[in-house]
Length: 329
Image 1: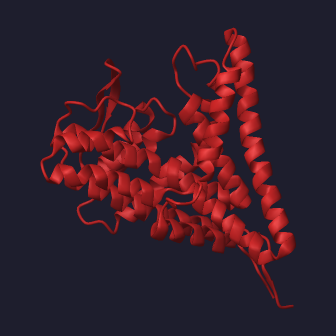
Image 2: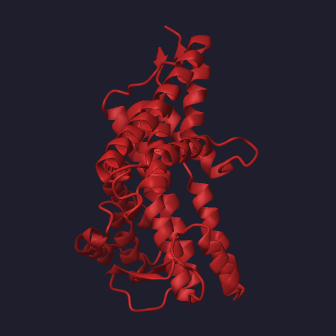
């Protein structure tokens, strides 16, 4: 009898993240990926727009392909020693790519000072997870920034790594993390990166396209267990507002969460003092409050669980592919 690994891999990685989060005293693979990207940015983001675009494409190919190849080589070597070691390595890679607990803790770091009426500490905590200016924000605006971050990063930080682990195990999950890191470091729409970061941004859009849409469905299903969720209204908001977001993917989870909470997300942000107007998503007219952060965390965790169950079900229905780690035949 052969016991296959993909379902075990997905469930184990999510449970490990829920329990342990990012290990603070162990080198994180994303840090190494970021170091490589920063070196390539310094050396390659030069010349004309055409040259920058060409070099940016090569950077995206080299980083993503290199991370996948390194992961696949490590798993192959571990599997040669023992199949259980190969499985353990793949679980570790997927676990390292998932960041549900880290996102939860970052959101709670904003919520705690808000509940103590300490807006300065809340602004400081928010500045650690958003790129917008946070000084002088009202409580409602601080909550809005936090809820938007949790909703958007449910895809980037949790469900997309799980999805790509379903497709190709730990190496694919780490390759996705490389894609996401490329976008966060080079995918800016400004004079310095609009050409060089073009490939990084487009690759991230492609990698998240299907997971983002599946995640909105998973969050909606999870909301069935959260009292007070505006489930019917959320579907209306999703259909109407998801495509208003400047990202082709982020609007799906943000619009749905706005509808579930009965609030409005989006609006005016400032980046280094420059005003940026985002489309409004949702029908809510009330002010956001700290409890909305807690509810967004419920949707984060519930959506992650439902999404993982869905992926395991797909894996099982399609024949349970994976590397055997026990053979009693």
